Length: 77
Image (cartoon, rainbow, N blue to C red):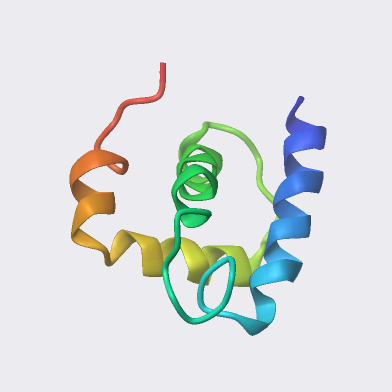
C-alpha cells in the first residue's frame, strides 16, 4: 500500500510542478480531496520520498485557514 500511495503522490508531485494548485493558480474543489490525501501522506509514520513540489503544495494548503481548521487538525486513525 505504501508503494502504491508513493507512486500516486509522485504523479501529483509532477502535476503540481508548474502550477500553484491542482487546476492552476486558483484553489478549486479538486484541491479538497487531494489536500486531505496529501495531509495523510505527510503525517503517516512511514518513509517518504522527497517530493519537493508536493511539499510546496502542502505548505500552500497549510496556509489556508479552512485547511488548518478542518483538515490539518484531524488525527490519523
